[in-house]
Amino acid sequence: MDFELLRKLKDWRIEAARREGVDLFRVFQNTTLEEIAASKPKTKDDLLAIKGIRERKFEKYGAQILALVGGNVEPEPEDGRGEKLYTVSRFLDLLNNNLRASGARIQGEVSSFDLRGSYLFFSLKDKEDESVLSCFMWSKDYALYGIELEAGMEIIIDGFPAVYKPTGKLSMQVSAIELVGEGALKKAYEELRKKLEEEGLFAPERKKAVPALPGKIGLITSETGAVIHDFLNNLGKYGYQIKFINSRVEGQVAVSGLMSAVDYFNKQDIDVLVIIRGGGSLESLQAFNNEMLVRKIAGCRMPVICGIGHDKDVPLASLVADLGVSTPTAVAIYLNRTWDDAVKRLAVLERDIFYKYQELLQVEKYRLEEMAGSLRKYFGMIFQEFDGIRHRLRSALADIGYNIKSLAKMLDDSFGLVFEKFARNFQDQGNFLDETEKRLKIYDPRRQLKLGYCIASAGGRVIKSVRQVKNGDSIDIQVSDGKMRSIINEINKIN
Image (cartoon, rainbow, N blue to C red; front, side, top):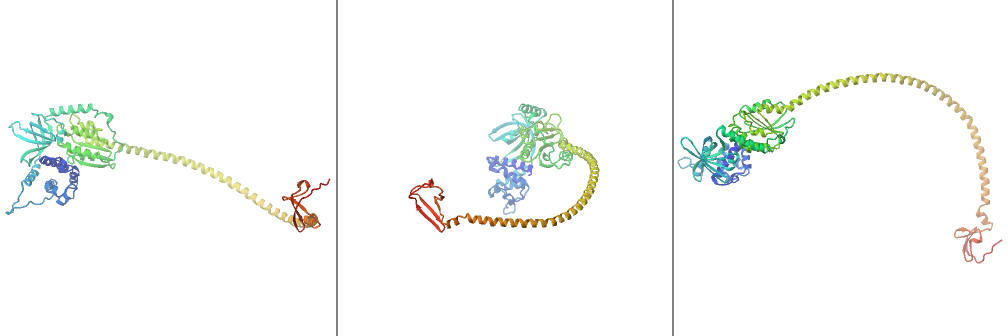
């Protein structure tokens, strides 16, 4: 994004809103101006492609915006003689666009002062010939610089002339004001320093530590001059990722750009924010003694390093920063510090690792040599034992062969005896079975039944005594060819 263009667009919007008597957002919202500054449209189509700009807005402001950006503006209509023909409004727009390029720093004495809500009107008078210049300033810009105007106060203003379209009067559109004289500046500096110090903004306990080995750096300074080159040339080659915003750093007029840059970086993923500029007088360093900028730096979520050159009084921005040094080179050296230490530490560690490796290697060498000697000894013992085992195995195998032959003979001898004994036992068992069969036949219940005997039972139990039954009981009687059921009518006991 072109922050200088964004500043010009915002200044133009202020003047346009003043002419129309409307709030700033009625002209354009901040997001629209930021997109214009980022894309830098060159034609009408480019401008209409931006959100927030339609035909009506383009008809009203398009030519002015393209003129600010440096794009192509559609040609003006011509009259019958081939000469350009302007409306009053269009001519005043072109005139104001040209007057905008006539920006100047003007010194004078405040002769009148009128603050009306969001507007500030005052007159600046030349002390020599009483010449008067009407001035207009937005009250929010007036508050930005922390100066309370009084009649007779000598100041310097930054701005550009513009014609107010509703009245046709010329006035100075003021963007910045500052005090005149080192005494006045010194007094304002001391008063603000005391105020901020009493609030604790300079206290060491509120300062954030700059992280070790920072990698992502936000950088705010002017792209012109030697400062940025001194800083970059002194940064070590440690792979820093640098996000840079070009900003004015001279005088009060730089305040708004510096604040916008700080706001931008406060939303970015960075490790540290660096704000640098070369040395200068108290007057040239006024932006870095601005109360609103100092408070923005104090409110940053990431550590802030200020490297601002100065003669005597340390800029308030440096006092409130988490680290303040006197030169951009000193900032670079500080950022390199932990990286340099890391490189030195790595060299020491590399050496220590090498020596430790050599030491361990030597220890392992001795250990391996001892192990090799032990292995040779153990292998000798193993081979000796192996020879003994082999000899014993051969003897055992020879014994086994002899024993097998002896066992074979014993088996042959025993086979006849076993067979003979088996045959004799077999005959004995056959005789035993025959005798047993005869006995079973004699005691077989079915044989007794066939001889005329019977078996009486009651409830599945054999009746062995008359005491097991009584008159009227039903009993079962089994004979050789079947069963009968009978009722007991009489029981006679036998003594």
